[in-house]
Length: 202
Image 1 (cartoon, one colour):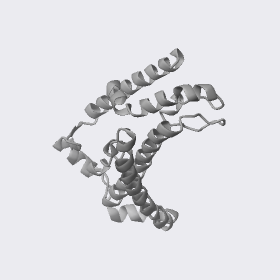
Image 2 (cartoon, rainbow, N blue to C red; image 1 turned 90 degrees about the vertical axis):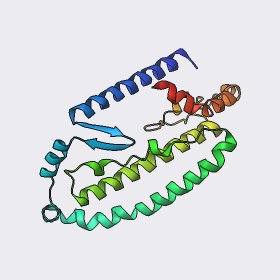
Image 3 (spheres, rainbow, N blue to C red; image 1 turned 120 degrees about the vertical axis):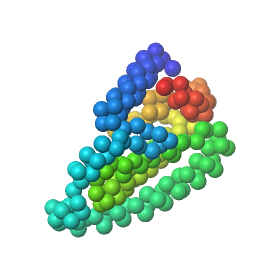
Image 4 (spheres, helix red, strand yellow; image 1 turned 30 degrees about the vertical axis):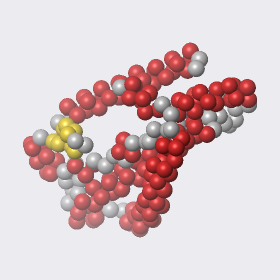
């Protein structure tokens, strides 16, 4: 790994630390804490939130028709998401131990906690649960795919990749056959040590 790449990875670790510090400040600002993956607000904050809720009847009265009409189409995406979630989970639980790749912790990606917000009505809470689940599944699947790609095909593309995953920067350059043959097993080894490296960042 060259010095430039090591420097960039160190910058990423520093940014991750700053993000965690910022999240802690936000918890203090909005008076909540997380205990055993559950969000807890102070009682006076909960009462304040309840006064801010838009009741369902008023919420529906204000809703735009285009939002109501397209809602079933949005929710149709839930079924392929559930199937994708299941298939990818079976894949990594079956194959990752064979490859020696640490399993992705699904709970770190599929985060559902907006329903704790008492200023949301039931419709808003259900919508937020759906969005949290769907985007979490995409994040979870992406990490499973990234670890698989690093294990089997750690080569950069010739064309620019929009928003590449975090493993991509360490892949071998497109067209560099000599480095690919030299570094393939080392890159595969890093895929097998991902969890340890991640834990050391924090």
